[in-house]
Length: 139
Image (cartoon, rainbow, N blue to C red; front, side, top):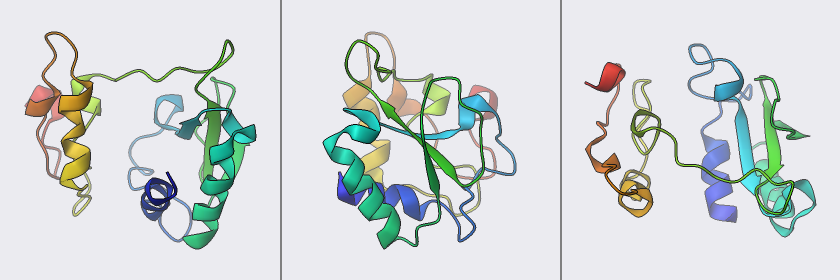
């Protein structure tokens, strides 16, 4: 988890902005991390340690589900328990492809997660990769 968190924090620039910050805004684009137990869970310390190791560029908030999209802020949400926020695989267009900014390329291991999370009839593996808006409108 620590290694994943380091990669997550590397996505943010020196000012704490995510790569899509100037284009994609709103609650559906807010930065969040869902972990068992949320801010009080065992992964929270690893998350903080990874943040510090990559320049401590972000603030953290406890996610409530309707949080605003704030610059330099990542919400930590509990994805377990009766009051937790479960993980859902998003639409094909929103998952498992490279970013749309020039040189915003993710490793093949991320792109290949499509096969892991594919559900009956869904084919995440055909989602296009690359930059310059490829994939907009299902193209």
